[in-house]
Image 1: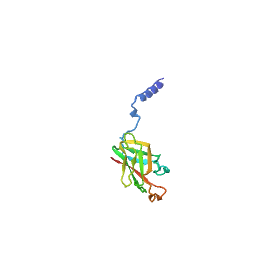
Image 2: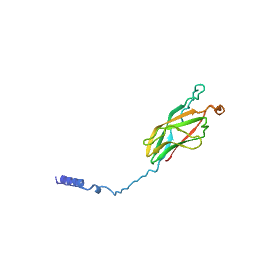
Image 3: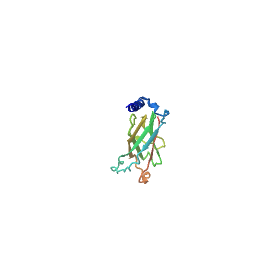
Image 4: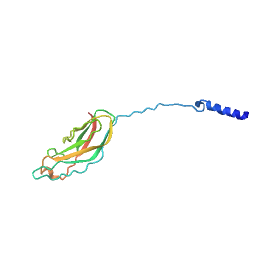
Amino acid sequence: MNKVLSILLIFASFLYLEPSAFSGNSAQQTVQFAVGEINEVSVSGNPETMYVAPGEPGRLPPEVSESSTTYNITTTSSNKKITVHLTQSSYDPTLCYLKVNLQTPSGATSPGDVQIPGDNSSANVVTGISKVSQSGLGITYKFRFVALDSEKLQQSSFNFLVNFTLTDS
């Protein structure tokens, strides 16, 4: 009986010991991380071809629109804007116009349809962008002839390379 009691007392004493008595050395670290400035904009692909239907005799063809593409934006900064400009295009603003309208991310503003300049300058399409990450925001393009010049209309299609830039306001 004494032997059983002795074993129980030894076992009970282990239960009351500090947990650190059973553990080895310990150490701790503080792990820090920092997020650098993120400013990214991307598009979902190329829009479908916009086909211009003939207008009424003596009138210009009607405006056509296309809205099959979207864009994504992420910024950790404040007071940003998206600008648009053309490169590698056969754009002649005396013959036609190309407008774009971007759906705005939360908290931002847009002037609506913006005619894309044909002189290598850029135009603001979304302003007031601050600390946002959104995807699937709509892009709408509108195209229209403003004059019918038979010499300038020798080509059957027009190609525009549209560039969107996320930059400081």
